[in-house]
Image (tube, rainbow, N blue to C red):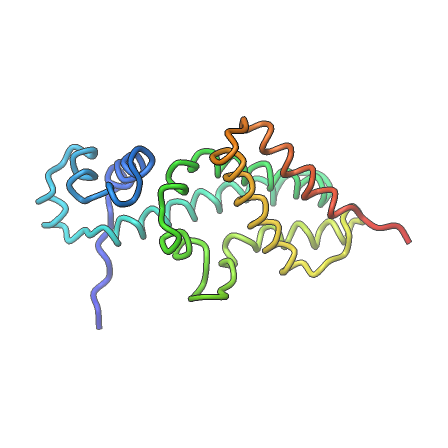
Length: 195
């Protein structure tokens, strides 16, 4: 039986985000992270905190931020379509706040945050369930097409998140231009069909 991972103090997570954003994953050594946090490397060693522990804590923080962000759309007033658009706008804002950190992570580190299991794994339900709920609400109130909500939520989460980050980083688009371009395309594909 393995012992639980040690808790990573919030100021260490903040420092890790800063180092990752500035210099990337390879440069985010425990020495650099501890220096940015204003503690010694030995302090982390005594607490039993490793780089994988810090990456896990980063993932947990991102998940918590996502949950808090999506809650705003889930409890908002409006149609399913209006609330879904709000959720996708909020997803873009969350991506913007974490842009440099997400870009600095390796593919494997990002997969550990967003996916269950190995190759072919699905996006974790924590990230897609809010969108699924809003798709179902929109189908029920007639403001969105009736779709396979689980699959469509997965496609939406990934297409909005990845495309937004790519347009921001790879193409240098402003946050507003990237967000509006991605959301216009996503929402038009979900128009309620007549008939």
